[in-house]
Length: 386
Length: 153
Image 1 (cartoon, chains in turn cyan, brown):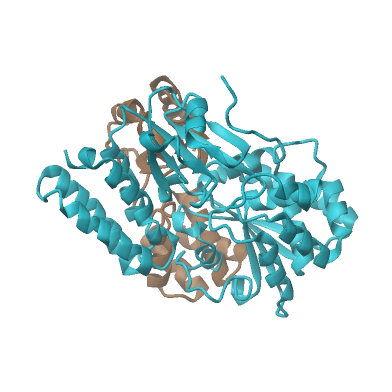
Image 2 (image 1 turned 90 degrees about the vertical axis):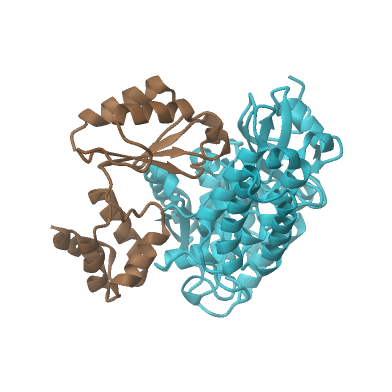
């Protein structure tokens, strides 16, 4: 198999000593750490893509105490499993990234919010935390305590403010932003919430230096990035790559020779039909989520769309009307068109509805509607109708 | 019974509002689901209204408020698994003599569908309580069910 996608090996590189990287980073002091992160161009790997260095800087500047560091391990986007692999293979890097964040912003407590579906790895992770605390934090004299908080099966808790509500013992409903968690987070105190991969990437930055890190990837997505490949592919798995590849090359390497469409960015991402494979580049322009799902010609795109809509209708937290009612109506709508109870033009009304959801829904869950819906309905209209 | 358990858990996790989820999670782990009595007890201990506790519980799909069996089987239904889980589902329905959403008469198993469990590289996948099973086949399903049928509770 020709290697068309540019792979790199940093995050899963076990030769990297967390202790050495931490030593190197800590020597820079809080201001130096922030500067290095800003220079690296590292963006949050959870999906929203906020600059990590700026987030840490804002939290550092807050006067209020105590402050908190939260690692978002509520990896719920269907088709995403990279964080699972990081936590299973290189948990030390995540813990070290969290500790470094704690040192930088002045937090003494870190919490890993682990999704309920990953309960099976809790015990092992707890052991890793124990070992890390004893062997690395202790000798460094860092006062930082890490604990695990278990999720209980709610996709929306991957949204940072919903996650915070959940830890506080509430329904996981997103808060209004601003204020952002860096000012007003867990228990209304300054909080940094970063994704698992972000913390691990912080270690890559300090190991190789900001300059070198910045040269990896594209201008929209600096550094290395993990992708989770699944669907109709003979080579599913997690790959660390430099973004900026043509989708056609990706399909040649990962497809099963019969690829019909690719869903880039998981359920909340975009569907690219085969006619666009040559022109689409992953990592430029559109936001790049971690999940890439391939579909072959045996798939019914109606079934794909139905599955995605059902997912969002179930996972909507119900707090805001556009999302709660919107997804239910979209689901009922495509069913009615399929059955012939509504005419084909009704799809246009549904498309308008997704635009309304985009501008009126409170969080990303509802705002994602037009991404996948539009790209599937416009490219596979016939399959949806007949 | 329920009263003793709730009291024990409140002592363990504390009476803060942020103890609510861990308490509910452990009740579900030990008793399979949250009975109305358990919800009322937790509310009393944490000085909350029962509706408040029920509202939180029903938000999370793993905090079951419906009667469930000892072992909750959750089959992943997201797109990668969706293309591969038909035979698994048929086998489970046949073995357990229940449909999705049902619980066996002996209260040992419940059969449920769930959204992506993050094992797409080893589809089809399912959870039995907190254990994860990947690359499952009808044969593997028979072994798994057999194991849990004979496992001492």
